[in-house]
Length: 388
Image (cartoon, rainbow, N blue to C red; front, side, top):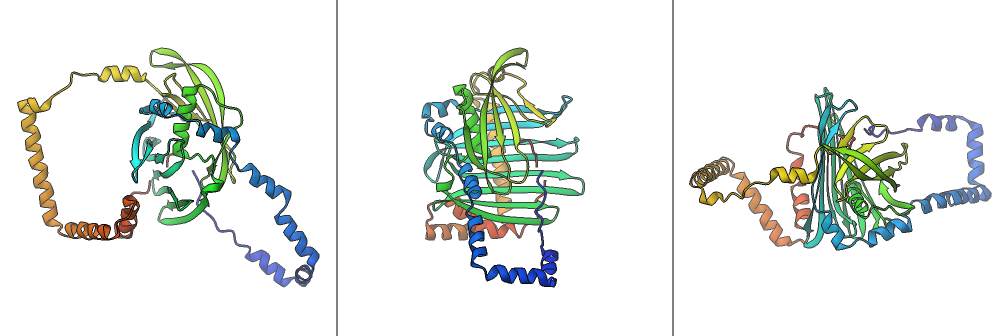
């Protein structure tokens, strides 16, 4: 869990310098010295700084992998995954699920990935993480929403991150709520420095593709963002094959390791194992007592769900229930609209403004239009699952 931002104030140091004649004399001497200025400039452009900048680039192998993705491979990735989240002792802590499907965003074909992890800490503190990402066929991030929460007794934490490509920039908005204290920040990076970018959402689809190929190129290092929006490295490597018990069977699974660097903290390592068809079999963070594992083979789940198709329109009883429920909902909705006439006025104003502006991105326009209303509603329960 990330700690809230803290301001570090150098007031004490500044006062010491002001109170020290010796320090003041040194400061004046430095300002008057062209040689000192030259040294300062030299330090700013030091080889070490240049080396760090060069390090924070995706490797050629990583960029090459993204550019080599074929549509047929993506087609094989369109399926859901569902795993049980368990404690070290085997206790049920919650569920982890991922769905991938074809979609469109602002009339652009793309992949839509939705991942969700939810559960509870000590059976009483709800926590969860949700990721929704719109990705191109080479896993370039068009837009991504990330939300994590944890609700403890007398204390809550809620973190949200929204990133979107806009005018050649990746714009990142973050908001962190600890109790009643809200911290926000907005940063942006030119897309030219984000070649080979992977995010929380695209990593999940990337590992499916790696699992289907059953091979991880050496030096597979991408650029990514840490929790403070710093550019960092994310590296993938191959763990090879091993035997894993899934349900009543022992199967051979392929392992992929993901190491996520951090500017302020140590690296985080995740190990994931996949079935032959790309389904996720297990997922765990190294050093964490929490693991995610598949309890039943997807083929067995699908087989158990197979039923004779039901044509409810031809069933008199079900058709009657459907029509009754339909009329009940219509009456309930009509009653609500009569009690809240402001709804029609609000929708009418929005549609009129929308048709006057005719924006290309309707979703972004709606988000900006309704954003001021968010401050008028009571705050949502501030609830983060570190497992996603």
